[in-house]
Amino acid sequence: MLLEETSLALMTAPRLEPKNRMKNTTFCTAMKRKLRLVVIKDHHLFRCKCKCKCGAKVDPWGDHCLGCTKNHKTVLSNGCRDGIYDIFKRILPVTKMIHSGTQMEKEVSNIVGTLPTLKPFDLFIRLNHLLTQGAWQVPFSRIGFDVVFIHSNKPAPSDPSIETASFNESDLHLREGEKKKFARRTGRTNDISAKTITADEVIGEINDASYSFIPIAVGPHGEIGSTFRRFWDGSDPLPIPNFDSKRPQARRAAIRAPWDILGTADRRWKADRGGSLFGGSYMSALPSTWAKQQLGLVCASKLADHINASFNHLTYDPRGSDERDYFIDDDELDGPSELDWKWVNVDFLDGHRNGQQHTTPAVSASLSPVGAPVVLQECCKIYLRWKG
Image 1 (cartoon, rainbow, N blue to C red):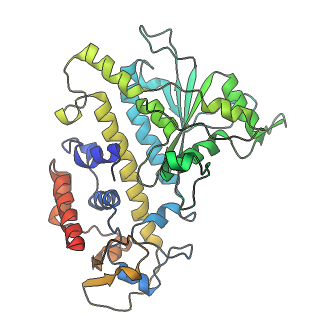
Image 2 (cartoon, rainbow, N blue to C red):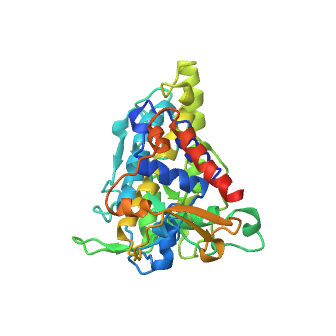
Image 3 (cartoon, one colour):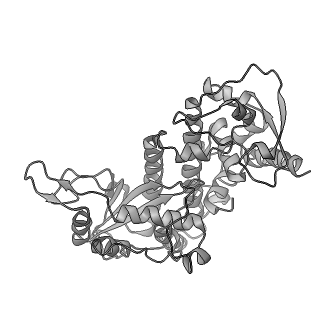
């Protein structure tokens, strides 16, 4: 709820810019996830065997839609990859890490010499410090990024005497996702030479080529893993996880990355452009503010779209009820205990299944510069009814 990037995206991103606008259904789902409100409002149907296509019961907050392995996340992953790619094309030239966006590529092969067809990165940045005066000097020739989504209700692996008390569960889950990227599960065989290398040898060839590998771990509410967070804004990362002794290259890769591109972009923008507005509005005057808005917009919108698309796979039996409002005791839901009752409307899920977009005055206003506060106000009214 307090995540800065999604807050900036939903509340302050200028709606005069077309790419900052969301569809009504996307914005509503993203805002409800942000405020931890019920996403599927007609959750009285859960008493009527409302289930995911995997057979599991679906919670009203949409958490299962993100964790279910039957809901493939290819579209979600590609959407976040493309969004981050567009952010980097605008921000990295300001930092002088690259000269132009042509130094960035997606899904590049010929990274691992032994396996030329392998594509270990979603995004790939080619650095050439000799072509740009005053370039940001880093001890790497390339930087690769790979997006991974984390969603688990199981306790994160940690030392219970130290880490559980020092870091929140979400950060530990994100770190575990980063660890799995550094410690690949399998190696591969070259189809032409028939040479096989192990998973750790793949990471070793990336390290030996002076490449930096940064996993982008994204949580269910748009949280970002500490490794990418350090590269993003210079935040202190979590301690490096314990790797198996057979994975020395994984640990070596986990400590190789530049950091604080947003702070560097702000400093160089102020030095070169003075008080010019980076995003064309006082709401996004600095590169860091604009970039945080865009990253939050990418994560919130793509996660919301994934949840909305998952509704098409729900099965249920409405039992022909015509009532429009339902008051349900908290004992009937596996939800937050502080909610005594919930107001619901039976139109929402049917609209998603039929491809309809339900538009209310508050939702319609979401496309205007003041739309987000209006929707937030409406959500708060419902929340006050719960607490009242």
